[in-house]
Length: 84
Image (cartoon, rainbow, N blue to C red; front, side):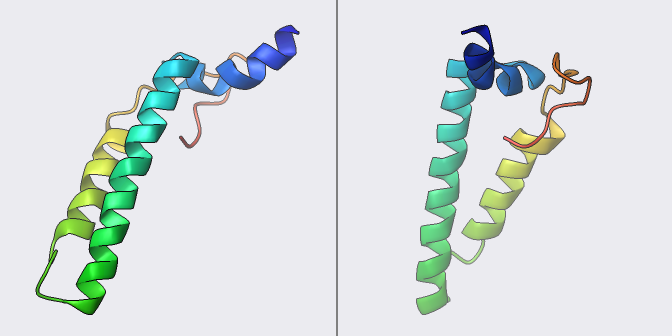
């Protein structure tokens, strides 16, 4: 049972989060990505709209996910945290 629990908690722990914190962050990233995706689709049809929205979303996501991530050594194998 402990190993099953680990499936849900090991990765979030490598980025300094609990399972629920990690889920909330992931959902937040996905909503920002969805918004950026929709803006890019509209921009493809109407290039005068959402001129910077896609690139702005990428910058925000990079800042939150890569530049300011809390990376802690994994308790499993000693590697640093991976992707969200």
